[in-house]
Image 1 (cartoon, rainbow, N blue to C red):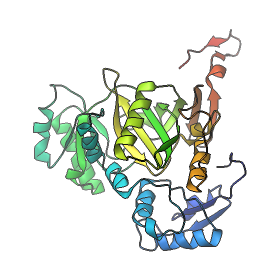
Image 2 (cartoon, one colour; image 1 turned 180 degrees about the horizontal axis):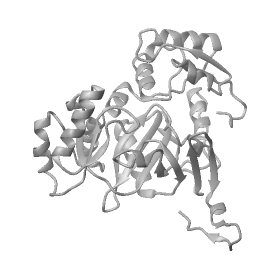
Image 3 (cartoon, helix red, strand yellow; image 1 turned 180 degrees about the vertical axis):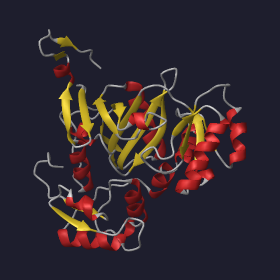
Image 4 (cartoon, rainbow, N blue to C red; image 1 turned 30 degrees about the vertical axis):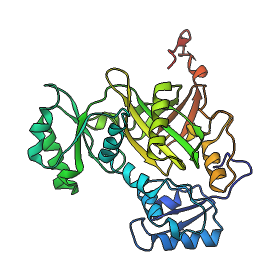
Length: 343
């Protein structure tokens, strides 16, 4: 948003006063949580007081709250349909939707009860590594690799007893060992404004959880990945005949290198990689704002930036962008230049 021209005035809202103290917005308001009754009333008050003309949700709970109350907000929305949002917030239902349409997704089964686990494991080759996760929620909630029904039972029981997650909220699917892609895109009334393929290379606290995977990347990069890009765009068009809003498609490659969709976050930009969306000749967030205000712009690179940039993130470190060309020649004290391998 700060890179936009002309400059925009940014207003932030949150239900956590500590987060608001860290906000870099021009003005901030303490509001109820998105699942509280007065949340929308509070937002509407801020919209009127600050003359807000674009709202950008930042997590799934806020997207859901805005989606359900879209008729009450007096400014144009750049949101997918309510049915699309509800579908995408249920990962199992979304996978079944794409399976019926021959769009690649991991083979997945819903866990109805703990008694189902042995039967589900028999549907996969013996010794297979399966992916156990909750069908709703963000940041890899309840996710872990398991090799036996006993491991799955222990993991699901732990989340049931300590976190109150129902057994029926879990799924088991084939484990996808390949590359991890996040492909965000912005649409306006069926027109693709811009899409950018990115690849996640490493994760925050990856060594501190069983999966070695977390939804927030510590290292990611822009990529040209035709298969993942094509699958992501096909998925968005399957969801809506005339897509509108932000769609962020996550994919992992199968053992055969086929990108399969694991989830789609709609109505918001993906946390952690937004810096990569303003690289090259276009700024995806600016295109979103322009479309939301009824002035859709034409992107110079609608299919994304072809140059390779790395995004480096860490705790207590401002995110940094490093062009790939600057990584290829590194130096060590007292030694000859070290040649780094690209990609």
